Length: 496
Image (cartoon, rainbow, N blue to C red):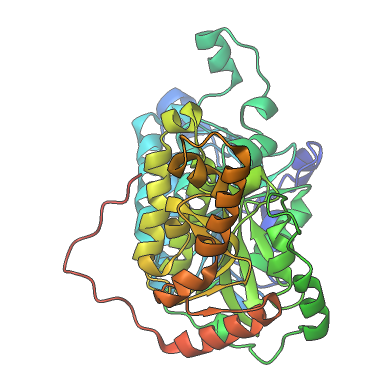
């Protein structure tokens, strides 16, 4: 039977309808629906009398920027977008088919949760989806959009995917909602404060992007798909290598003046990144979370690369638990889909103190070490200023398999800063003038890239203006790099 979409019901809430969302993401006229006639088989609580068109979720295939994608959108106007067995099977089958035909899968989540009338069958539906999410991981990109409520078990499908987009004042994700929180913890809290877009983009780190409205969200999804391979082994992101803009003179002038005279002062690492990648190509990921680290995609001579950097403009660029998780997760994604990595290093170390130690900085920091060591993609590292202690090693040093490591002339590569080192080496020295003299000697002798270069830990000491050319040259040399020859094993044990 024909069914009229209830567009006005969604519009009254300031939201687009499921079909409108699909059409906003896909190229015009490209969407083909599948499983439209699927219906539930539930007979409990009078459900046999209820007609639930397409079981509350629209599924199918379309195109984004001319390339095939699988896409589904839950329809909140149909039984609250609740997930029953057939609803879950439709999504799971779509993901399975996307794996087979090698295309990204995009999910628009807007659901009241499990369909209670179906009991354990609803849980079966979630389980089917989770299983396919895991099968698809590293095979095809999985993109989740939270465009309404996403509660309980429903949050774990987005949680298993590669990227999560949220929309301000519309997205709400949580394991247990405000009513349960009040009942169990006697706490009044709103949907927004418990699991809104700002919470997950700034505090929890669950969301990768927060968008101001739905249209901005869908445009960013389309943009992301221009940067990433559409399946493992896809080299199409390198196809437009001749079409790029880069103002060499302007970039050289800007990058030469980035570092402050005082090495204790911060600066924004994005200013360095933007001087080395194609013009206006840096597409930041998780921009609002763990500001001491910067991650994102960019183009270098038209080819996609993954960018990681410490940001001295926020907490001095120190590595803490959140920054470590952010970096490790991004590095592993790039490695999974063979996206080369460019890392900018200016890090004073791992953050000290009981708070981060008790949160598990050892465990979280180990994720960075593991991710970079495991990554077999081309890896190019630029040390702009500080590279101290274990954080120097962790940030894609040669010791973790970096292919090329470049250092600017003012780079400081050492176990720790001069003041800290002299405080230990000359702990019994009372004269502050002697300590200051020794600190300067330490800087001149040990805190330069010279020793690291002599030991073959650095490929070359370069001027800031040479950074772009060094990156381009390195990536061209590494273009045929094959995967590492690892000992035979099932898989490693990432320190989660």
